[in-house]
Image 1 (cartoon, rainbow, N blue to C red):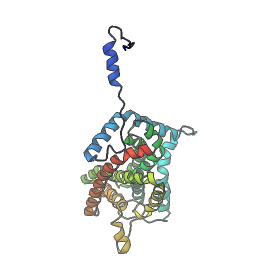
Image 2: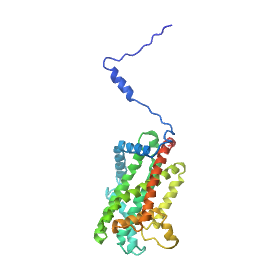
Image 3: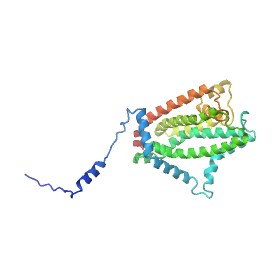
Length: 303
């Protein structure tokens, strides 16, 4: 029995255009296990492409968060520049009143200002990475935006606050004569980038565990708040005894104290310890990147 089938015939000139439109529409469905065997180079390639693709979204996220910090205030952008300097001012006042004692080989104002700035810069990626994945997980589960694009949108505030503090430190250095006097101080910049990536690696690993148990974020917050007193931010740590031995296993102390001396004095107090810490930090970053690349589909699915 023959059956007639009615078929719409496209008008002349529309067939190829309709076919091209149909070919462009693709629906890709990924399994949570499709990255199970993904390696480091695949992770680097994927995340680099995502960051480049979402560069405009990253910039807009930074502007939105930056403007929201002062949009409803009377003094406006004054707070954006003033608030990053509050921690420096508070602890500098304590040093001026001799509540805390600093080293004698540089101005106590420069010592504390650099210590506070470096500690905040190094620890921020850990907290912000976990916070970004926790607060924006719903967005990540429903859109194609890259996870690093969401994280980098928060790092804009870190960069701005660090630049504001470094501007004040530059003024203090010029006033108190604690400015860099050796060309080796230029190593401060690449080593600062290494410290940031090492901290980001820690943040990525902790973010995976924090997705399972939110207690991780709270414990990390407590450790960072108390860790500032054991990282040579306000005063030098003891070199002898048990305290002196434990400081060698504190990467925050190594980075803060080492970077500060490198910038001001042009040398590292313990270059071998810094080399091991920086090398271990980069290895940790690459391991964390690979692990996070494999775990990301599961994190998105759970969001």
